[in-house]
Length: 201
Image (tube, rainbow, N blue to C red; front, top):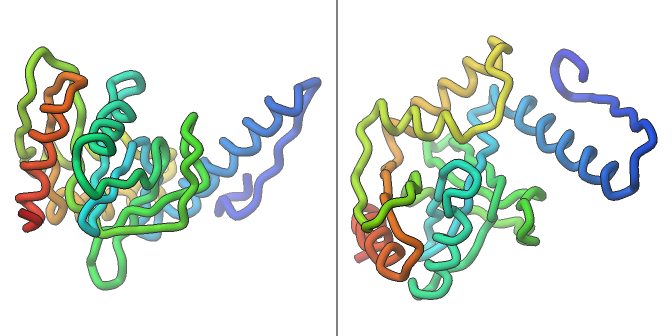
């Protein structure tokens, strides 16, 4: 890649067409994350539901149940739509509003939508034997979002840009931890908390 991440070169050695496509797709995703980081933009590992004109991001390690939880919203929370199921983009606008965007990258789910919405809440999913949701404090919010955004932290300019965006999110966007089962009640517990916060009762 060039030092400013505007250009890159990729070389394939004896690979299949599907492997080459996968490599190009992921390389472009990383280049986008690296290049856009200084501009109050984060490429995230999350699943996103739109509901009531707002976007709700579900974070968590692979296999935690992000997609499952989004599916529960689609099934049980009226008015829900899937925006992206793996790699949405967060951006803080010049007006200070933090929005989430669909992207060309959505993992195993073909959901490539050119749509956006102000963020209603960001929720970190944790598997549990019960359903309970708790609002995170500022430091917890920062750490939670930081651990799910893509970037090359050794690059000072990139890291500084990400910090500025993360600081804005931690101070202005409601963030939660949801301990949950993969059931209807989990979606209803989550929706009741985050939609109340956003004034969508």
